[in-house]
Amino acid sequence: MVSLPQLTRVPGAPPHLLGVFAHRGEVIPVIDMGVLVGTKGETTSRRAVLVRVPRGSLALTAGRVAGVSMLTGELHAPLGTSGVQAHLRGPAKAPSGEVAIIEPEGMFELLSKGA
Image (tube, rainbow, N blue to C red; front, side, top):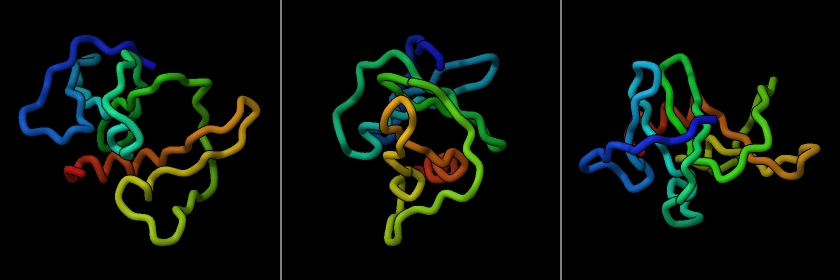
């Protein structure tokens, strides 16, 4: 989890890209998950989950995070899903209630292509 500093807007960026910020010498794009999946307007949260994958990093807005876990095995998207929905799973049951599961490598790849 990171507390978001003042973000730098990116001209011509899609609505789900709130901006970028510098973190430990790396420019991190901040993605508003609510806007990306079309469930709500822009978040007012000043916190995000920093996701690092082999090709780079991004931050996903989060209103609340109960924990982060590494899962093993394969996560299959429901048949017929595409775009961002192909990289989201859940809700899944956990001791803390229902949780969303994000497949980070695929999400990073999709967003890198300008989704």
